[in-house]
Image (cartoon, rainbow, N blue to C red; front, side, top):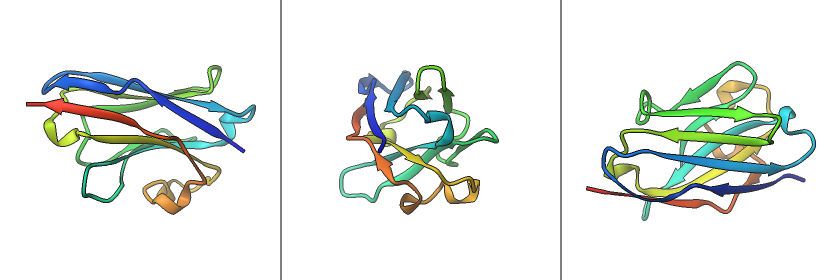
Length: 124
């Protein structure tokens, strides 16, 4: 069982930055690939970024602005978000999967563990 707790969300002006953190309660954090998803009001939850054993993946909508990283010594995955836009406003969720296949990381059903989410609001 893996529990995930996100933090770092908030209100920021367009062009600003935030760093989200997701702390995992497991002794085997390095055995999991980690993902970030987001869900805006009235929209489906969508892939943002993921990191496994061969580097990070990011959605085209955030490429060049968002960076995912992880610190296995702290059981934590991060999402650095720069040059934020109003359309980035959403609840951001952290997720964990034991899948080793990076082409599965884009899909919600791949992940067996989810955090409660953290709100990010970008004002124009």
